[in-house]
Image 1 (spheres, one colour):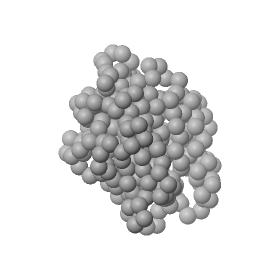
Image 2 (cartoon, rainbow, N blue to C red):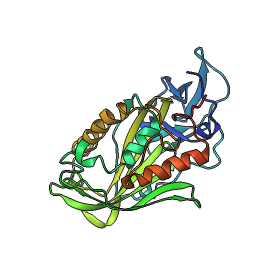
Image 3 (tube, rainbow, N blue to C red):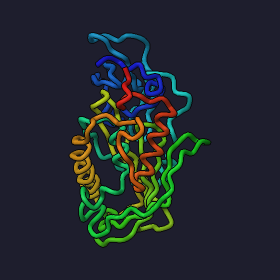
Length: 289
């Protein structure tokens, strides 16, 4: 596949590597169908370049180092990388969970993250369990002032609401989609009920049907071991991987009535509407070219 012509996709920022793992040794990768190379200069600054037949094809791409990742763009974003206010709170645990490659559209991965209805069946006895299978009504909206999709007033019964907990409870959740290939979850922190844990999923779209994704967590948790936190999140994510890779079609449908939504899918409906308004075609059945 060649570099996409989808300007809406090109003009976004993407997390493409864990910052701590980038060294002076060049690393080859792909983004939106384009070969890229990244490395650190002697002064520590990250560099990302488009490559063709093993050679750079132009000047270095814009690059940012944020949220523990290296970010770049193949286009011209009209704004900087979105803010995660919890990242600035010094008492939080920052837990990057590692990259997982998936044979799926990155947009399918976002939509799966938004879906509460699969909790009892895919994440049994962790994020959901029978007979608590109904998704109570919640609010989904496109927030025009900040150009993001939000789902709020979400509630769901979870047998284990966090790595620190062993008993179940109905939890309050909120979802945020700040860019087409990033999705976030906010949940009440069990050890500090007046605060919210923040979990972000950064997606690196390699091809239309191939991506990498990394969950990063900003937690109010001083008791769990790093290993326990990683294991909790990685078990969930690997369960999701099986589901996402088996969805058909592989690419996300945006045409009306191609997949019939239910009431529980209102966040997905808002997300797809937002993608269509933006003109995103990469990773969708509309075709990116």
